[in-house]
Image (tube, rainbow, N blue to C red; front, side, top):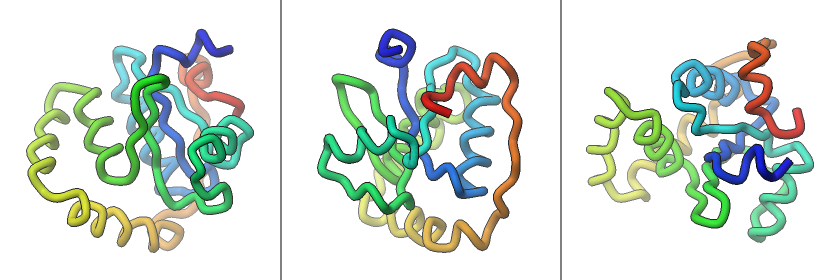
Length: 137
């Protein structure tokens, strides 16, 4: 299994959150170069990722982007890197990197605190190709 995700960017997300699932679907539809794979934070894979880094394994309000053996990013920095990796017009979001992380994370945290109110959990059915991008679904 490791070969299938080792060279990808892994997006960890709250599998019970409608906003998070919306963004996973949004990334899937734009990931034309198959750079990303996905795992919910609640999955065994997600729990292992969190525990190996000493992160809380019971709080799922943060999105993580992990490039195995390289780095992991959280919150707004993860989102900005995802946009950069998608390329094209989404790279323009990189100009917001001039903002201090603490400032961009304030906006992220505001959305995160209210995410369950912003979107209902929806049942998204990925295509067979997209299903291959999920780890332990």
